[in-house]
Amino acid sequence: VAGKAVTTIEGAAPESRISRLQQAWIAEQVPQCGYCQPGMIMTAALLTETPVPTDAHIDAAMTNLCRCGSYDRVRKAIHRAAVVSGQAPAAKQGDRP
Image 1 (cartoon, rainbow, N blue to C red):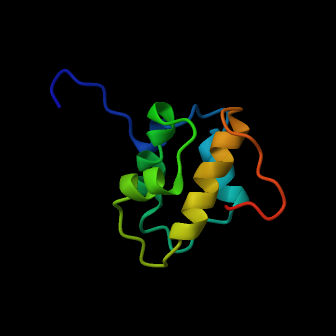
Image 2 (cartoon, helix red, strand yellow):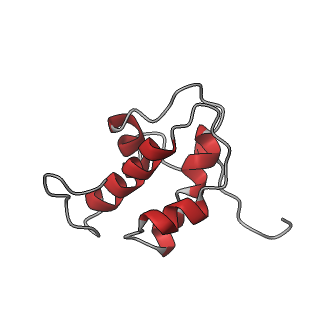
């Protein structure tokens, strides 16, 4: 990684505020044991390249193993973060996710 910028989970959001992704993580109650959370949040940076991801985009990006099986909540949190960013329309009653 010589000469490259590396962002860790600690650098994902400034200390003084929580990122929209972290807010969505909390709202969707994603964390269980914490084993996969840093990797899942870092991988969810796909929102920078795909601001309105489909479930297929999310599934392709999420290669981390989650012991607790929180994959559905991860998808919901990523969709929520896309809505919060103003990139995606808010879901209507009965819409997935």
